Amino acid sequence: MRLVDTGNHIAAHAVRLSHVEVVSAYPITPQTQVIEEISRFISEGEMDCEYIPVESEHSAMAAMIGSASMGVRSFSATSSHGLAYMHELLHWAAGIRLPMVMVNVNRAMGPGWNIWCDHQDTLAARDTGWIQLHCASHQEVLDTVIQAFRISEDPLVTLPVMVCYDAIVISHNYMQVEIPEQETVDKFLPPFRSMWKLDFKHPFTHGSVIYPDDYEEVRYSMFEALESARDVIKKAASEYESAVGGYHGGLIETYQMEDADVALVAMGSIASEGRVAVDELRRKGHKCGLVRVRSYRPFPMQELRDVLSDLRAVMIIDRAISFGMEGPLYSEVKAVLYGKSDAEVYNLVTGLGGRDVTFEMIVENTEAALKGKMEQMSTWPTVRMNEHHMVSRRGLEEFWKEGSAQ
Amino acid sequence: MVEIRFHSLGGQGAVTLINMLAQAGDLVGRKVQAFPFFGAERRGAPVMCFLRMDDKEIALRSQIYKPDFLVIMSPSLIDAAIEEGTKEGTTVLINMAEEEARSRTADLPFAVYSVDATPIALDLGMEVEGLPVVNIAFLGAVSYMTELVPLEAVTEVLREKMPPSRVEASMEAARRGFTSVVEIRKSKAASRKERKSAVS
Image (cartoon, rainbow over all chains, first blue to last red; front, side):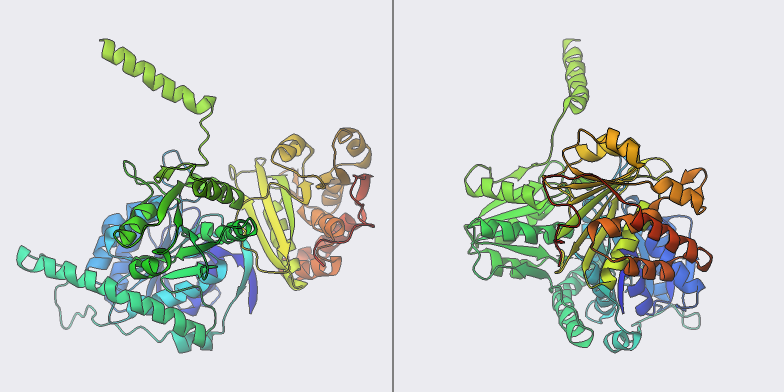
């Protein structure tokens, strides 16, 4: 069945096809359509699922931890401040190794209050132990949510998975998607068999106090599980392709990289717009390709080394900023290439708070970098400080002057 | 690829409009993309919407600054709509009676068409809290203007998506929108009859 629908509604279809039994969520723009659509499926009898309406995202994740601890396939969806509010419990879910899937619609953090896209919310949850997969198209949202349950429930992994896609650009955009048949998905995604579950007849304690004698071992096992997840994610992608159809890369997806000596590196919808930038740069005579980071955790260390090490230049596009440092994706790609590559590495920090990212801007800045007109550091190509922005800056400067005079 | 940008007021139904156009495009085998830019989500606030149709997969995810068609659903938005970006060859469709459109758009360097969508909506009872919901009339008008989707595809979408009690009135609104587009001014580019659709 082919549908034209929003990325959010498509995610809900993936949840329906995955036989999720508990959904626990709190509405937040731009995610709300996901759980609205799931509610509709449940009320119309298309899903046999318990929907737990909670009073906050913190409780949403707490309820998920409860249901997943009972061996029940569980799902939630959130965004931005919702993700931040449940941050403590993200650690809990990963720390007690609970399989579950959550959609995070990438949205900017306030203040200033903003419902549009960037990756600040998601990247702030980087070190919680969750697997993070980033999507660039509607079809990929559908396919990845289904794959995410297989990855999460794999005995080598047993960790929660966050499926991320961009606010508005994907969440509220109507595009075509092929919705597979239920029987086809069932062949790919077997019922959830939990390795452990809470049982009143055989009570035990899970996630309790751990002394220094054992804590590092628990953390090391999580580290190992994320290492194992590399192959599990790749296998899920290729087996999904043969069982259901549709492939969007494993840990990375490449475009026009075969003969490239320059690459763009990006995540999410910018990587789709980036394809048009690659076509344009090639038309202008640059041997450019694109590498999309699909799995942000685990990070595709070897895959990126393989495709980027021998290049002349790499342009990394960040839709987030690590204040006091640089674009986070930039830092990580550089770390991966350290000692392995002589490539020049450039960084655009752009698209924050829904600032539109156009292929023309990417082309212009990539060409500037290739002509030696850009430093190898974070560059903010779309910032335009106008009179209005400068007022507050000048106000601060006045204040500082007065302060130092006293 | 054909790119259309819509300027409307919250409550006029532009998001539903681009959704239905996308559904109709899908019915006739086009690749489609339709998304809004929300300002404040409230009645009366300006809303921008974007629609792309192509014969191959659409990789672009950015907004539309050089539209082939610029659809202005409220006369109050003319200046804002043009300021947002046009190109040589942009064709404008505006919600206005013919005479007013002739005088109000006299200085515009574009091909201009008008459709008087408000009376169509009011006549067919399409009104929410005093604001005429002109989207279905525009569905017909855009179908006529752009030739991307035939009226038959539009009415099929209405039959499928509208509540049963509203199907007849909706189809009538779309038909009236389709037949009441008036050519106000030709640009240097060809008019509808002479132009070949950019998507074959």
